Image (tube, rainbow, N blue to C red):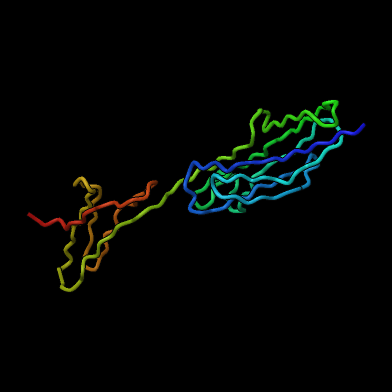
Length: 193
């Protein structure tokens, strides 16, 4: 009497964010930590690993890990170029029970859950900053006078004031952003009354 069966493991890259056409790599390891397969997918794609064949009932343990760029470290929260990667090792257990008909009753658990596949989710955060400036042209001798520049946001609210001399540059405070878009500001020289 012989038994035989097979299992094919898979992992899906969640399509929760637009990653701009980037691809993601998943590695599959056996119980001894040996890499047995690598698959590359885009967001929303499913990595379908090689098929394993079995001739003995039992529990077979594997690990699926996302391959993280070297620049995404624990110190920076596993984030590189705005993408936060999943650093966890995901355990997969294939349980095979002899069905007494030459095959197996099969159960696959991903991270201890009865689901059809593992879903690995990354997040994307955009960030940036801008520092606005204005230069007072030094085309005339102003006799040591200073000049004041005011910076206003799109609602007309004054957000910063800088004072400079002739040929001086008013460097306003730094603005940080976490959403793409157009941001409008106005710089006006303050005219004495």
